[in-house]
Image (cartoon, rainbow, N blue to C red):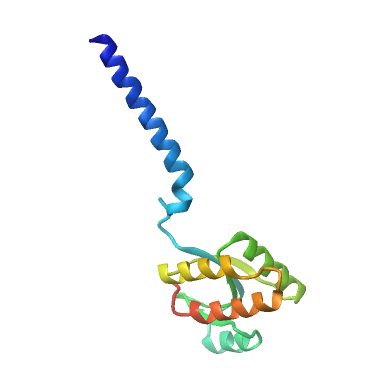
Amino acid sequence: MKKTFITIMVAFFVGVCLSGISIFYLKDKFMIFDERNTVTAFQVGVFKSYENAKKTSENYPGSIAVFDGDYYRVYIGVAKDKDCEELLATYFLNQNINVYLKEIEVTQTFFQEINLVEKEIDKNDMEVFELMNQEMMKKLEGEIL
């Protein structure tokens, strides 16, 4: 009886340990525990009036002005992947554009689309990467939560 109890307890603890290890290594693959769909937006300004935000957004091709409840924010870039984030930051720095990185929550549809695009895009060709960013900005306008 005692040996049976010990065998059951050992099997139980081994199962718990293996399950924990499996969840830890597979959580990113299956997006377990990832409830928020956040991306990094590159912001160039915050304004009280829409007119000022619109004037600023006209200076940057592909930028959008978004109202967040109190202010109008002008975004010129968006990235999900850290490598893409670094590429965009370097690109804007080389263009002498001061940006503020801001985490924003987006819809699941946009999150999946930017994830797919960033996996497929050639990160060495900055012209293509810039065009991809402008296209993603057009799609971002209605997708911010």
